Length: 49
Image (cartoon, rainbow, N blue to C red):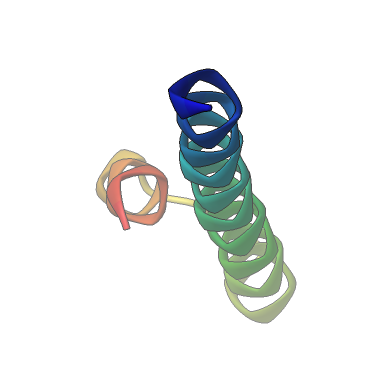
């Protein structure tokens, strides 16, 4: 019974990571559309957050 719970928890954390990466990609895209120039610092910051 602990194995499905473990798999579910692992899947949940993986989904959370995917949402964070998707949000970073959207943020990066909007920054690109607004500025049309991406500095390395902005790119790294959008990747971290």
